Amino acid sequence: MTLSLAKEAVDIGIVTMSADRMLGFYRDTLSMKYKGEFDMGGGITMHRLVCGKTLFKLVTPAEAPAAKSPANGVDGSTGIRYLTVSVDDLESMTEACILASYKMIVSLAEISPGIRVSMVEDPDGNWIEFLHIA
Image (cartoon, rainbow, N blue to C red; front, side):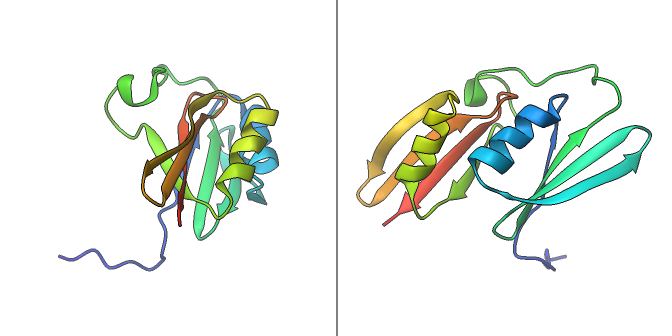
């Protein structure tokens, strides 16, 4: 069977116990459009934010999960360790994260001719790479 997409993006769910801090990062600093809050039942809340055609779902359970993702991004564990967001203005996005005092994992860098990146850590330790291709 071939994967047949009904949408040109993959939605991303991030489980967090600090919705306010995560909204401060994704909504306020990165300027993702806030689409609202959804009660999933059982005390679980989802905040939905739009990034292009991707939907970021910040999910807060009623009680803290038994396990927490380790720190250190790609060196911390296996699994999804970072996300890449392609941006038009890498300098402004990087500067917004610096001004908001988020931890920069990779400062602005040209990784090959015409390809530049920076990488930041969100309040829960997830890494977000910003990519600009000239």
